Structure formats: structure tokens, C-alpha cells
Amino acid sequence: MSGYILVVDDQFGVRLLIHKVLEESGYNVKAVASGLECLNHAISLNRPSLILLDQRMPAMTGIQVLSRLSQDDQAKDIPVIMISAETDLEDLARCFGVQNFLSKPLDLNVLLKTVQETLAGAS
Image 1 (tube, one colour):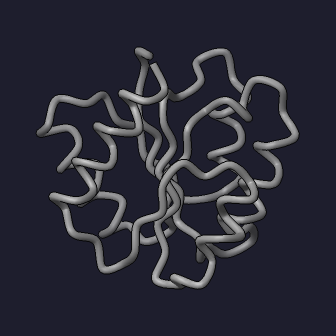
Image 2 (spheres, rainbow, N blue to C red):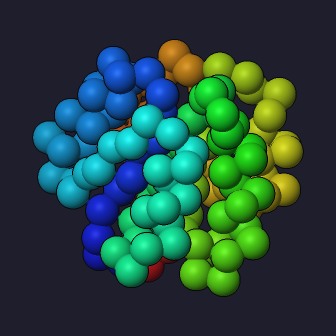
């Protein structure tokens, strides 16, 4: 799968950190601050190859975004890695098709390994 990784987190510092780490590892990255922006990218003609999705965001949670993604014929095939401090959400997130679940605070080495494995499994 070619394309870009979409980072979705309402916290600017977290978005910036993940964006920088992925970009320095050679990935093409876009970052957005809301679930609605994520959905707009996911249903566009230039869909991401992977979505890193935060759970706790205003207006629309990560689980709500997953629910909407799962209802779109093209977007439902985009692999998603959920990122959350709420570890009890993993089972629910997997019901909506999440490939991987990472706990906050993030271990950047685990993040990179998980991204690599998820993209390899999607191609």
C-alpha cells in the first residue's frame, strides 16, 4: 500500500511528536485534530494507507470515528491503530476492526514497530 499515514489526535503536542517520528522514519504523514477531519480524508479519493486514531477527542471519539469508517465501503478497509490511555477499550475497538491498539503514554519504538507490521499486513 502506498500513500500516507493519517495521525488523528486533538492534542497538538502528541500530533507533532507522532508526525515527526514517523516522518523521520521515512513515512509520508498527514496530521489532523478531529474525527471529522479524519473521516473527510478517509472517504476522499486520496485515502490514507493507515490511520493512527486517538480515542479521547472532543465532538467525536475514536470509537465513533471507527463506527463511521466501518460503514463506508472504501474506508472500512483502511487499517487503523487506536491510541488511548483507556486500555479497557481495546475489545470494543477490535469489534470495529482495529488492527492494533497502543496505550498512552506511547513507547515510540513500539509505535514504529506496530506501524511497520500493520502496513506490511495490509499490503
